[in-house]
Length: 180
Image 1 (tube, rainbow, N blue to C red):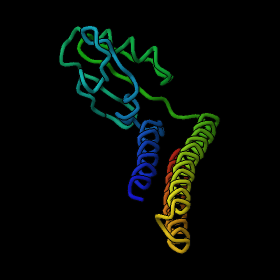
Image 2: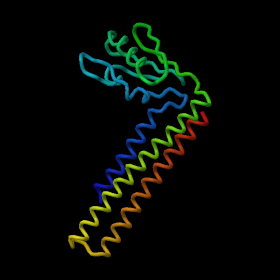
Image 3: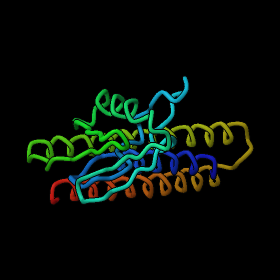
Image 4: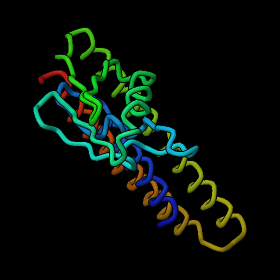
């Protein structure tokens, strides 16, 4: 059972990581998590080649450890789907995030719900796998019918727990997006 529970937890953790990268009107260094730059021929995330700070509520400052990386970082951000235009002063890259429009907030809220549903599907697929494994063990005579029913109940309780956790995460992030 713990192997299936770990898989469900991984789905929740992946969702939390995705939610951290969704911009809520405030500058958050996690919005850069998916962006990579070419660092001597190796794709490297921005945090691996620079210091990222938040000097103001809607501003990110990226200071590369090597000044030559400023242009690479600027290009990578422009090519990303962040929807912002970075500025650079030759030493660092500055990203100013505009206020989110009402329409953009609603789009983000829909996207958050969609990602939540996708995570619930992953959890339910793990439940299905766990139930199938229990059925096989029951048919093989490894566990009794009562043990099988108990295991099914335990699997369902675990699934409900993770689905509930995902629902709470979606609710919190949606509220954050819509009320900023």
